[in-house]
Amino acid sequence: MLAGIERIDEVEWEVPIGYVPGMRVPGRFFLSEDLSETLEAGAVQQLANVAVLPGIVRYSLAMPDIHSGYGFPIGGVAAFEQETGVISPGGVGYDINCGVRLIATPLTPDDITNPRALIEALFTTVPTGVGAESEMRISPHDLEEIMVEGVDWAVAAGYGTEKDAAHCEEGGKMPDAHVAPVSKKACQRGMPQAGTLGSGNHFLEIQTVDAVYDNEAAQTFGLSAGQVCFMIHCGSRGLGHQICTDHLRTLESATRRYGIEIPDRQLACAPLHSPEGEAYFGAMAAAANYAWVNRQVITHQVRTVLNRMYGIDYEEMPLVYDVAHNVAKMERHTTDKGRQTLCVHRKGATRAFGPGCPEVPQDYRAVGQPVIIPGSMGSASYVLHGTTTAMEKTFGSTCHGAGRVMSRTKAKKATPGSEVRKELLKQGIIVRATSDASIAEEAPDAYKESYKVVDVVRRAGLSLPVVRLRPIGVIKG
Ligand code: 5GP
Ligand code: MN
Ligand code: MN
Image (cartoon, rainbow, N blue to C red; front, side, top):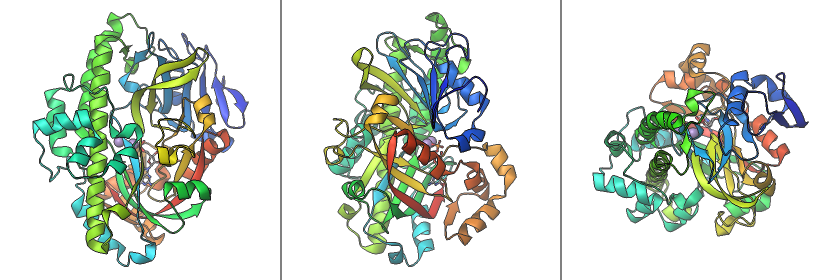
């Protein structure tokens, strides 16, 4: 382990106050001994830097998928007091409300007699790639409604059901969205891209449940061994990216104007109650709502293909759950001061609310919310459930994936995409992408081993495994 870091227990570590000057609270992160070699000094420095921000509550936190990001580390969680705290785009990320959802089906792998045909059908139906544009023609008025209504818009437009909305974090709609602080440029980028997967790390994956760890919870979530599921990973496309870019600029000057001292320019922020902070929050919420619509429209595209190819009804393909892993939200938590409303930033981290929380949909409330953790195109993904321990230790948060160990550039040089594709095919995994180059960037070796990361959050009690999913086919942006 890096010098200056103190061990709390088997999988929990403390970055003490003083690790960087001006820290208001300690840092805490979760990692096992065998993953410690994946830890970048730069990411720990970022974790410590976040602890300098005004109004931060208790700890600057990071999950075992920790790696360096823009300002905040990816895998980072930080909560700020409503009165004295700040909001920072670096704590949300460029892809606002990037997230993951899982759709269950009644299919088993044997039903998919021609997996390649299924993958091709999905690849032609779901627009994929950097500048992919949607078949869906939405007007500027539609876009405004999407940004305000979130998934409710998609349900009203026939892309899903009330049940889908109930199975999204926040019901698929952040209530405090504002369209006024969303620039024209952001709207222009977002308009043609609703219902598109995007590029790079984003994916649509055919998976099968190959291990069940908690029968009761699996049953509650509608999951069972041998079942085929579809996982969607994408976010707010150009709209969210532009909103982040626009507001970083205004928040950089706001940081100076409010006299906030930050150890890194990338931590630009503003008081939650300032006009600049409120403007970013409203625009960020608008992008979050757009992202939920995006994932819902893709869900509809997937269901349409499956209905056509296998004759399954839409109702037989329920949305298990949809989690956001790049977002800041106002949430109620118990702190030293009692029950408090906090602005919880999760940047490459997943909400993991435990049993009994009113925010968890009623049909799952006894178990805790489903937590969806993707692995890589060559390794297992997991569904877990949230816990009371997460509520106590991490403001109800856990990891969001395996996390990178190799930069895109490094991964591209390590193994050619065509080779990665062939190697995966040998393991029975079909990969379809817009280019072999994007496959290289996303090679399984570019990520930590997902089972190790999931084991850390299990041992820390932050979320508990329900099922494991093995990839059959992957569509990559
Ligand atoms: P991020 O949102 O940080 O780009 O990625 C989230 C996580 O998705 C990564 O940490 C990685 O573990 C996982 N991931 C990336 N590509 C794939 C893929 O093709 N399939 C699956 N199942 N997971 C992936
Ligand atoms: Mn993303
Ligand atoms: Mn993501």
